[in-house]
View 1 (tube, one colour):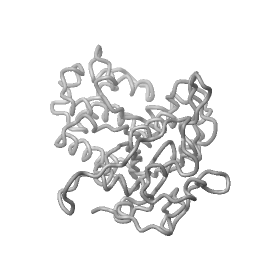
View 2 (tube, one colour):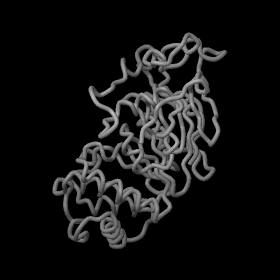
View 3 (cartoon, one colour):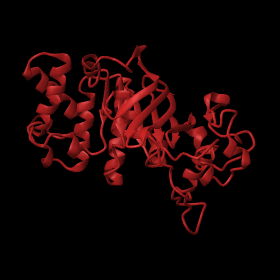
Amino acid sequence: MVVEDLEVRFATDGGWLTVLDGVSFSVGRGETVGIVGESGSGKTVTSLSVLGLLPPHSSRITRGSVRLDGVELVGMARRKLEAVRGDDISMIFQEPMTSLNPAFKVGDQIAEVVRRHRGGSWRSATARAVEVLDEVGIPDAARRARSFPHEFSGGMRQRVMIAMAMACRPKVIIADEPTTALDVTIQAQVLDLMRTMSREHGTAVVFVTHDLGVVADICDRAVVMYAGQVVEQAVVDDLYHRPRHPYTAALMTAMPQLTGRSGRLATIPGRTPAPGSMPAGCRFHPRCAHAVDRCVDGDADGRVEIRELAGGRSSRCLRVHELTLEGTE
């Protein structure tokens, strides 16, 4: 899947405001790409835009492309897009209790997805639902398929969501912070499950999170977002050992460490700017410890364009070749 130069605007009382500005990334077969950043950076909006799930009357994609195996999804007719969603591309949402229908048994909800996209009898669809529940580690899957969502723990509900997403063997899965509400033990189990699914079935995974530790654990590459823009992209090991954007380095400094540092936990001053009140030049410069005058001026057009670097890396920093930023293990 290739996302290229994606721009999204939302309707407000003051007019249309840009919330995503030129977002580009790709994910290949069997690869896991993490999209990371603070709340308000545009991670979830990016995910919903790719799937065409933004409200049509209050949002619009004004520029850019989303291609899956060369097929353009932006502007695709609603009926065709609904056929793609759940079959070729699926999404795992952050809170399974609000995503699963409490009035229906979990097996029936998965079987409905299978029948919608693959057809066949209700019996064969139910058998497929039991099969994927077993694959994601639900004990006694045939019996638990007849249970309602409230009869599962939080971790098991998230496994049900993963089973639903995997039911039709999609080419791409977008996981929107699927481990946020889980304790660390269940989180580790869910991450291991997703890693196994990707490896065994060749599924491409876009993993949306604010947790750099999760990115290090499961992802091959990382896309760092800030204020609706991609500010850095790199292979995960390269990103952690030598970040090339001050925002990435600041996020790493703010991570709790078991060794190497003592004293108060570092923080990033200020907050992510709201759409409609973006600073001139580099959007991170009001919070950046490395900002200089030209960071306010930006490039020739007043913006800061992303710089392509060696090794397939990129950074939206004017001082990328001047700064040596501290990474983490």
